[in-house]
Amino acid sequence: MNPHDNALAAVGVDAEDEQIYRDLLRRPRATLHELAAHTGRTTVALRRAFARLEALGLVSRMAGRPVRFLATRPDVAVSALISRREEGLAQARLAALAMLAETPRTQNHSPEELVEVVQGRAAVVQRFTQLQQAATGEILVLDRPPYAQDPSEQNVAEMERLAHGLQVRGIYDASALEVPGKLRLAQESVAAGEQARVSPEVPMKLAIADRRTAILPLSTDESAHADSAVIVHSSTLLDALVALFEVLWRSALPLPARPLDAPSGGPADLPDPELFTLLAAGLKDEAVARQLGVSLRTVHRRVSEMMERLGARTRFQAGLLAARRGWWGDDGRRHG
Image (cartoon, rainbow, N blue to C red; front, side):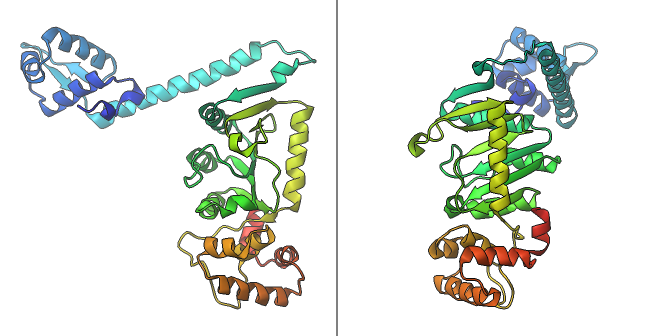
């Protein structure tokens, strides 16, 4: 058995016991001695393994002689183990809340209680994931490169939380949407329920959970941006970070969702919300053409047509006028 095939490790079954369970599934009528001969294990080792598997509900002992064990149907057995594990996690969560309630709280918190420093890219990713999972009401995000995780892959944890009703508001820096594939991923998040906007200049990366905890880079050096982070707990500093987010939110432009199967372009007489969002956010024409999958000439033509139609002198003004005229339809409603 390939050691990487330990599919049941997540429910507490080690690789050796899983292989024995698989052997028993393939040979449901085999005796203990037959299984020992086939697997090369001793009957003593098998008895110990079956004792562990029996405790997990994966096998049961059959009556009579010689000694035989019956494998429980995998779908039934594994579902029961998953339920047991979920109950355990729920109890652990309640225990954590009880521990928090027992923790003495004072009016004057020391600085080390309000701010934590996290070192190492893996640790930063882990704390950000924990912040997402712990949030119960809302997450506020400022998004800009560089990234600790692969920017071409969707944030699965966020998508799962959105599906369970978590509110997410994100402001993307224009440079983020120049990363290949980032616009598509952002639009998928919007389609899943994220409220997203774009700004020509997002000053830093930031995530705030329930207005109680924030995470942001420790260093301003982009080469080390994702290698360390600061965790800020409830304090006037956190209040200032929330206020900063709200100021940026009011001045940012909505990022419209686009159906995944919709064409990038459209009839010349229809407004293009993606085009205005990207241009008003500060992306260059070449980057816009690349993101939308159209030619540079098409971008130039549509920009000229729409700015003339709106009577706008600048791209940012065109974006604001388009939003005020309701050219973004239902997406504008979705983004507040």
